[in-house]
Length: 279
Image (cartoon, rainbow, N blue to C red; front, side, top):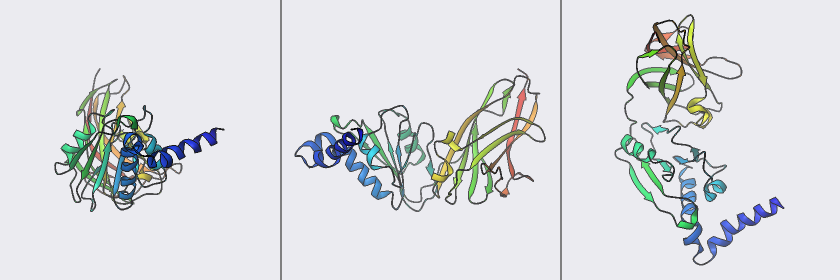
């Protein structure tokens, strides 16, 4: 019965309703038209459509996007940018739930085309914003630029952080900016080490808390990997290097460090120095 109901709902929504006079405009027109347009674009260029984790998905998107090249993720958690991509990059922001990402994209790409979309009330979609970054648009500069390259095509651009000092027992907030120079079949793991021979703290994980793993990256993507790292209350005060790298799981084999401003011999790159102070 469940399969029959699903089949009937799919037929009603995508075949019978759109063909009925007036119903396309009142119920399905905008989300279906948008989905089909973006799927066609995604064949030759990068297309990102927001998926809000705590909200019910737009019906047309839920049915039409799976199996297509359209990338879907929560822009509030991870907002990939484009850097010098040869083709246009398109973003569809679900502004009903996300009031900031469209503005962030407009600030990042001043030459972008911004188109507000007000769908029909019955479409269950809510207001959205289409942001189109033109070909060749550069990504905005990173607060703390630093360079490193890991095989087979991951480039470190720099980082943002909450500051060069943190008290023992408190947290440091970072966003490390990576650029994809190739496309990857596997989901790779990145790490940050605080300390050298003996680690004070470390963080391992897939980029963007797993919202945008490397198997979904496209060449030209700039990915801000934001996270927090908390230090134990008894962390000894002092200056500690911050080192980053990558590895494959479950083999734990590290990606080769090709070049870096501050390389380490074990396929790590130092991005800065953190001072830990007494609580």
